Length: 336
View (cartoon, rainbow, N blue to C red):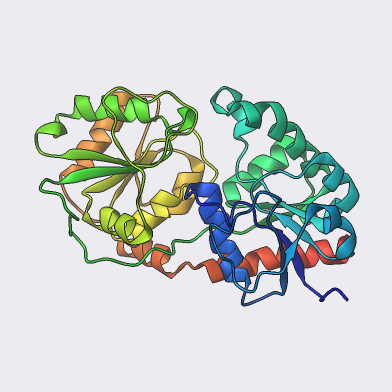
């Protein structure tokens, strides 16, 4: 007899060994949901147990659609295959993190542009849609005309430990920090150019944390890729500022993580970054290296973000995100 569950969760990203945005989102949300729902996890046939989830009740794809009839199914990262979208309809909850595949297709991976975009379009037409920011929700409504009763927002949170301010873990000089994968949308090339133009290299280092994705590695770049949460929190706390100059984002978690440590943020002047930072960023034009350079100089000169923005970043929790996601699940259960 199959145990009753409240949600089937696609946990492929949650159990992956990587630590990029999708994996961190899926893992943090899954752990937060554990206290609120009975969950069956779909981990896929290639799972080798890299990450252990709480109270895992695994389901395989062959029985995903028939074992838990009437139960909402959440795809938090990968878009569902069209067969799943058509079979589940509104009972499917799909997190659409951003509209990169449509707005900036030239910055998407081959798989994203050729396959995931089409799959996501099928899901958007049929499923209950969850976004990670109000800015993306407005984009989804504008682009796809998704009715309001199928569209929900569950903003992200920082779960990094809070560190002693001003500590520079293992570093002799002040530094500016960038936390981003090496892919075209992250605009690392212009950030490096801006750092060279700023004149700050005499007094500051530029530390990049991330992984190589599908873009070319900019000349002169070195990456810290094997960074755990404690080390990342320390890097944020010790930085003079964090720079996130992406061309486009659906949220911008490094902004929230940096502010939670009390560290200023230099960021692109995007609607979503103003939302996430509560207007507390040093906003720059991501297409203009001189604008970015001026932002870096301003941040390096000292100063702290507003206390209200720091408090907002620290008090936001993944339990809040999970409660907001549960509203989407409840709607999917009723309407599916």
